[in-house]
Length: 308
Image (cartoon, rainbow, N blue to C red):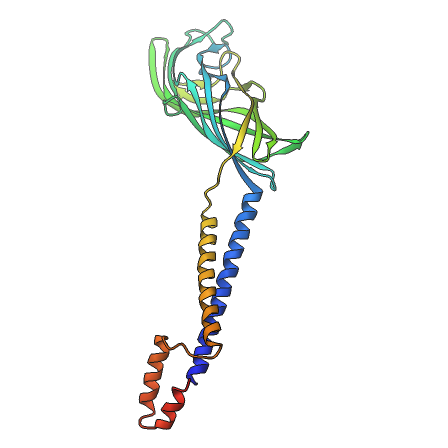
Protein backbone atom coordinates (compact mmCIF):
# COMPACT_ATOMS: atom_id res chain seq x y z
CA UNK A 1 0.00 0.00 0.00
CA UNK A 2 1.41 3.41 -0.89
CA UNK A 3 1.87 6.08 1.74
CA UNK A 4 -0.54 8.38 -0.13
CA UNK A 5 -3.31 5.76 -0.08
CA UNK A 6 -2.63 5.08 3.61
CA UNK A 7 -2.95 8.76 4.52
CA UNK A 8 -6.06 9.16 2.41
CA UNK A 9 -7.81 6.42 4.40
CA UNK A 10 -6.72 7.94 7.68
CA UNK A 11 -7.95 11.35 6.56
CA UNK A 12 -11.32 10.00 5.45
CA UNK A 13 -11.74 8.21 8.80
CA UNK A 14 -11.06 11.49 10.58
CA UNK A 15 -13.67 13.26 8.53
CA UNK A 16 -16.25 10.53 9.18
CA UNK A 17 -15.42 10.68 12.90
CA UNK A 18 -16.06 14.43 12.92
CA UNK A 19 -19.34 14.03 11.08
CA UNK A 20 -20.48 11.24 13.44
CA UNK A 21 -19.62 13.34 16.47
CA UNK A 22 -21.49 16.30 15.06
CA UNK A 23 -24.56 14.16 14.43
CA UNK A 24 -24.37 12.80 17.98
CA UNK A 25 -24.11 16.29 19.43
CA UNK A 26 -27.08 17.46 17.38
CA UNK A 27 -29.14 14.48 18.47
CA UNK A 28 -28.35 15.17 22.12
CA UNK A 29 -29.40 18.79 21.80
CA UNK A 30 -32.66 17.84 20.09
CA UNK A 31 -33.35 15.25 22.81
CA UNK A 32 -32.72 17.75 25.59
CA UNK A 33 -34.92 20.38 23.98
CA UNK A 34 -37.73 17.88 23.48
CA UNK A 35 -37.44 16.77 27.11
CA UNK A 36 -37.57 20.34 28.39
CA UNK A 37 -40.56 21.11 26.17
CA UNK A 38 -42.53 18.16 27.59
CA UNK A 39 -41.58 18.65 31.28
CA UNK A 40 -41.53 21.94 33.15
CA UNK A 41 -40.48 22.70 36.71
CA UNK A 42 -42.28 25.36 38.76
CA UNK A 43 -41.67 26.58 42.31
CA UNK A 44 -43.45 28.70 44.89
CA UNK A 45 -43.46 29.52 48.59
CA UNK A 46 -46.63 30.75 50.27
CA UNK A 47 -48.58 30.68 53.53
CA UNK A 48 -51.17 27.92 53.76
CA UNK A 49 -54.20 27.73 56.00
CA UNK A 50 -55.21 24.51 57.66
CA UNK A 51 -54.68 22.13 60.54
CA UNK A 52 -54.67 18.44 61.31
CA UNK A 53 -55.98 16.54 64.30
CA UNK A 54 -53.38 14.24 65.82
CA UNK A 55 -55.62 11.74 67.54
CA UNK A 56 -55.24 8.53 69.50
CA UNK A 57 -58.07 6.68 71.21
CA UNK A 58 -59.47 3.29 72.17
CA UNK A 59 -62.11 3.57 69.45
CA UNK A 60 -65.68 4.97 69.34
CA UNK A 61 -66.70 6.44 72.69
CA UNK A 62 -63.08 7.26 73.52
CA UNK A 63 -61.21 10.45 72.75
CA UNK A 64 -57.73 11.88 72.79
CA UNK A 65 -55.77 14.23 70.61
CA UNK A 66 -54.72 17.75 69.74
CA UNK A 67 -54.55 20.05 66.71
CA UNK A 68 -51.46 21.03 64.75
CA UNK A 69 -51.54 24.08 62.49
CA UNK A 70 -49.90 24.40 59.07
CA UNK A 71 -47.92 27.56 58.30
CA UNK A 72 -45.69 27.89 55.21
CA UNK A 73 -45.68 25.71 52.11
CA UNK A 74 -42.55 25.44 49.93
CA UNK A 75 -43.24 23.40 46.84
CA UNK A 76 -41.71 22.33 43.53
CA UNK A 77 -44.02 21.05 40.80
CA UNK A 78 -42.72 18.72 38.07
CA UNK A 79 -45.33 18.96 35.33
CA UNK A 80 -45.35 16.84 32.16
CA UNK A 81 -47.80 18.39 29.72
CA UNK A 82 -47.54 15.48 27.28
CA UNK A 83 -48.20 12.67 29.77
CA UNK A 84 -50.45 14.94 31.88
CA UNK A 85 -48.70 14.02 35.11
CA UNK A 86 -47.62 16.05 38.12
CA UNK A 87 -45.17 15.36 40.92
CA UNK A 88 -45.11 17.63 43.98
CA UNK A 89 -42.05 17.80 46.21
CA UNK A 90 -41.59 20.19 49.09
CA UNK A 91 -42.00 20.93 52.77
CA UNK A 92 -44.63 22.47 55.04
CA UNK A 93 -44.25 23.91 58.52
CA UNK A 94 -46.51 22.78 61.35
CA UNK A 95 -46.88 23.77 64.99
CA UNK A 96 -46.56 22.30 67.47
CA UNK A 97 -44.50 19.36 66.25
CA UNK A 98 -44.97 17.43 69.51
CA UNK A 99 -48.23 16.40 71.16
CA UNK A 100 -48.83 15.26 74.74
CA UNK A 101 -52.44 14.47 75.63
CA UNK A 102 -54.63 12.12 77.72
CA UNK A 103 -56.86 9.37 76.32
CA UNK A 104 -60.21 8.92 78.06
CA UNK A 105 -63.43 7.00 77.63
CA UNK A 106 -66.83 8.67 77.69
CA UNK A 107 -70.46 7.81 78.27
CA UNK A 108 -70.66 6.11 74.90
CA UNK A 109 -67.90 3.64 75.70
CA UNK A 110 -69.30 0.18 74.90
CA UNK A 111 -67.17 -1.72 77.36
CA UNK A 112 -67.65 -2.52 81.03
CA UNK A 113 -65.58 -1.46 84.03
CA UNK A 114 -62.78 -1.22 84.70
CA UNK A 115 -62.30 1.44 82.08
CA UNK A 116 -58.94 2.14 80.45
CA UNK A 117 -57.19 5.49 80.38
CA UNK A 118 -53.97 6.53 78.76
CA UNK A 119 -51.40 9.17 77.97
CA UNK A 120 -49.89 9.68 74.52
CA UNK A 121 -46.63 11.46 73.73
CA UNK A 122 -46.31 11.82 69.95
CA UNK A 123 -44.07 13.62 67.44
CA UNK A 124 -44.98 14.48 63.85
CA UNK A 125 -42.13 14.03 61.37
CA UNK A 126 -38.65 14.57 62.78
CA UNK A 127 -39.79 17.04 65.42
CA UNK A 128 -38.24 20.11 63.77
CA UNK A 129 -41.59 21.67 62.87
CA UNK A 130 -41.11 20.97 59.14
CA UNK A 131 -42.60 18.07 57.25
CA UNK A 132 -41.03 17.02 53.94
CA UNK A 133 -43.17 15.32 51.30
CA UNK A 134 -43.09 13.79 47.83
CA UNK A 135 -46.44 13.08 46.19
CA UNK A 136 -45.00 10.77 43.56
CA UNK A 137 -46.14 11.04 39.95
CA UNK A 138 -49.91 11.59 39.72
CA UNK A 139 -52.15 11.50 36.66
CA UNK A 140 -54.42 14.47 36.13
CA UNK A 141 -57.72 15.39 34.52
CA UNK A 142 -58.18 18.43 32.28
CA UNK A 143 -61.23 20.52 33.10
CA UNK A 144 -62.22 24.05 32.21
CA UNK A 145 -58.84 24.96 30.76
CA UNK A 146 -57.03 23.84 33.93
CA UNK A 147 -55.51 20.72 35.42
CA UNK A 148 -56.49 18.85 38.61
CA UNK A 149 -54.41 16.29 40.48
CA UNK A 150 -55.32 14.28 43.57
CA UNK A 151 -52.58 13.33 46.02
CA UNK A 152 -52.01 12.32 49.63
CA UNK A 153 -49.93 14.15 52.20
CA UNK A 154 -48.59 11.49 54.57
CA UNK A 155 -47.76 12.46 58.14
CA UNK A 156 -45.35 10.10 59.96
CA UNK A 157 -45.95 9.76 63.69
CA UNK A 158 -43.60 8.36 66.32
CA UNK A 159 -43.89 8.26 70.06
CA UNK A 160 -45.07 6.32 73.09
CA UNK A 161 -48.27 5.61 74.97
CA UNK A 162 -49.09 4.48 78.49
CA UNK A 163 -52.36 2.62 79.20
CA UNK A 164 -53.71 2.10 82.71
CA UNK A 165 -56.63 -0.22 83.47
CA UNK A 166 -57.64 -1.84 86.76
CA UNK A 167 -54.43 -0.71 88.45
CA UNK A 168 -52.25 -2.30 85.75
CA UNK A 169 -49.95 -0.01 83.74
CA UNK A 170 -48.63 -0.91 80.31
CA UNK A 171 -46.27 1.17 78.17
CA UNK A 172 -45.29 0.83 74.55
CA UNK A 173 -43.96 2.66 71.50
CA UNK A 174 -45.83 3.67 68.36
CA UNK A 175 -44.72 4.31 64.80
CA UNK A 176 -47.27 4.88 62.04
CA UNK A 177 -48.49 7.42 59.50
CA UNK A 178 -51.82 8.82 58.40
CA UNK A 179 -52.79 10.65 55.24
CA UNK A 180 -54.62 13.80 54.17
CA UNK A 181 -56.44 13.55 50.83
CA UNK A 182 -55.72 16.73 48.84
CA UNK A 183 -56.26 18.19 45.39
CA UNK A 184 -53.99 20.54 43.43
CA UNK A 185 -55.35 22.58 40.52
CA UNK A 186 -53.58 25.00 38.23
CA UNK A 187 -53.90 26.93 35.00
CA UNK A 188 -51.51 29.01 32.92
CA UNK A 189 -50.77 32.44 34.33
CA UNK A 190 -48.23 33.37 31.63
CA UNK A 191 -45.63 31.84 29.34
CA UNK A 192 -43.50 30.72 32.30
CA UNK A 193 -45.88 30.70 35.28
CA UNK A 194 -48.91 28.93 36.72
CA UNK A 195 -51.80 29.86 39.02
CA UNK A 196 -51.84 27.12 41.68
CA UNK A 197 -54.52 26.28 44.25
CA UNK A 198 -54.76 23.42 46.74
CA UNK A 199 -57.57 22.18 49.03
CA UNK A 200 -58.63 19.17 51.09
CA UNK A 201 -61.10 16.61 49.72
CA UNK A 202 -63.35 15.63 52.63
CA UNK A 203 -61.87 17.07 55.81
CA UNK A 204 -62.22 13.81 57.75
CA UNK A 205 -60.96 10.24 57.41
CA UNK A 206 -61.76 7.06 59.29
CA UNK A 207 -59.33 6.05 61.99
CA UNK A 208 -57.37 2.81 61.77
CA UNK A 209 -55.76 0.59 64.36
CA UNK A 210 -52.15 1.77 64.68
CA UNK A 211 -50.99 -0.12 67.76
CA UNK A 212 -51.78 -2.42 70.65
CA UNK A 213 -50.66 -1.76 74.22
CA UNK A 214 -51.65 -3.98 77.08
CA UNK A 215 -54.24 -5.73 74.92
CA UNK A 216 -55.98 -2.46 74.03
CA UNK A 217 -56.24 -1.44 70.38
CA UNK A 218 -55.26 2.16 69.66
CA UNK A 219 -56.90 4.08 66.79
CA UNK A 220 -55.62 7.21 65.06
CA UNK A 221 -59.19 8.58 65.21
CA UNK A 222 -60.97 10.30 68.06
CA UNK A 223 -64.45 9.86 69.66
CA UNK A 224 -66.29 9.35 66.34
CA UNK A 225 -63.43 7.16 65.09
CA UNK A 226 -62.26 9.78 62.58
CA UNK A 227 -59.51 12.39 62.40
CA UNK A 228 -60.26 15.79 60.96
CA UNK A 229 -58.09 18.11 58.89
CA UNK A 230 -58.16 21.13 56.58
CA UNK A 231 -55.83 22.44 53.86
CA UNK A 232 -56.28 25.60 51.85
CA UNK A 233 -53.92 27.33 49.45
CA UNK A 234 -55.37 30.42 47.79
CA UNK A 235 -54.27 30.92 44.18
CA UNK A 236 -50.55 31.69 44.07
CA UNK A 237 -48.20 32.15 41.14
CA UNK A 238 -45.62 29.43 40.61
CA UNK A 239 -42.74 30.46 38.35
CA UNK A 240 -40.78 28.21 36.02
CA UNK A 241 -37.40 27.26 37.43
CA UNK A 242 -34.22 27.01 35.32
CA UNK A 243 -33.34 23.36 34.86
CA UNK A 244 -29.63 22.49 35.16
CA UNK A 245 -29.52 19.72 32.61
CA UNK A 246 -26.39 17.59 32.34
CA UNK A 247 -27.36 16.42 28.87
CA UNK A 248 -27.46 20.01 27.65
CA UNK A 249 -23.86 20.60 28.74
CA UNK A 250 -22.83 17.23 27.30
CA UNK A 251 -24.45 18.09 23.98
CA UNK A 252 -22.85 21.52 23.85
CA UNK A 253 -19.45 20.07 24.72
CA UNK A 254 -19.73 17.42 22.03
CA UNK A 255 -20.81 20.06 19.54
CA UNK A 256 -17.76 22.20 20.31
CA UNK A 257 -15.41 19.21 19.95
CA UNK A 258 -17.08 18.25 16.67
CA UNK A 259 -16.79 21.80 15.36
CA UNK A 260 -13.10 21.93 16.21
CA UNK A 261 -12.36 18.59 14.51
CA UNK A 262 -14.49 19.49 11.50
CA UNK A 263 -12.56 22.74 10.99
CA UNK A 264 -9.23 20.99 11.52
CA UNK A 265 -9.94 18.19 9.06
CA UNK A 266 -11.49 20.53 6.50
CA UNK A 267 -8.54 22.90 6.77
CA UNK A 268 -6.03 20.11 6.25
CA UNK A 269 -7.77 18.87 3.12
CA UNK A 270 -8.10 22.36 1.72
CA UNK A 271 -4.40 23.04 2.19
CA UNK A 272 -3.03 19.71 0.98
CA UNK A 273 -5.84 18.25 -1.03
CA UNK A 274 -7.28 14.78 -0.64
CA UNK A 275 -4.70 12.01 -1.05
CA UNK A 276 -1.62 14.01 0.03
CA UNK A 277 0.32 12.95 3.04
CA UNK A 278 0.76 14.98 6.21
CA UNK A 279 4.50 15.72 6.62
CA UNK A 280 3.99 16.06 10.42
CA UNK A 281 2.13 12.75 10.73
CA UNK A 282 4.18 10.67 13.19
CA UNK A 283 2.49 7.46 12.09
CA UNK A 284 3.42 8.15 8.46
CA UNK A 285 7.00 9.08 9.36
CA UNK A 286 7.43 5.86 11.29
CA UNK A 287 5.94 3.82 8.45
CA UNK A 288 8.20 5.55 5.93
CA UNK A 289 11.30 4.74 7.98
CA UNK A 290 10.35 1.09 8.28
CA UNK A 291 9.54 0.90 4.58
CA UNK A 292 12.89 2.41 3.58
CA UNK A 293 14.70 -0.04 5.85
CA UNK A 294 12.75 -2.93 4.35
CA UNK A 295 13.75 -2.24 0.74
CA UNK A 296 17.44 -2.12 1.66
CA UNK A 297 19.53 -0.34 -1.00
CA UNK A 298 16.84 -0.16 -3.64
CA UNK A 299 17.03 3.58 -4.17
CA UNK A 300 14.42 3.48 -6.87
CA UNK A 301 11.75 2.07 -4.52
CA UNK A 302 12.75 4.47 -1.73
CA UNK A 303 12.41 7.40 -4.11
CA UNK A 304 8.96 6.22 -5.19
CA UNK A 305 7.92 5.84 -1.58
CA UNK A 306 8.94 9.43 -0.65
CA UNK A 307 7.40 10.82 -3.78
CA UNK A 308 5.04 13.72 -2.82
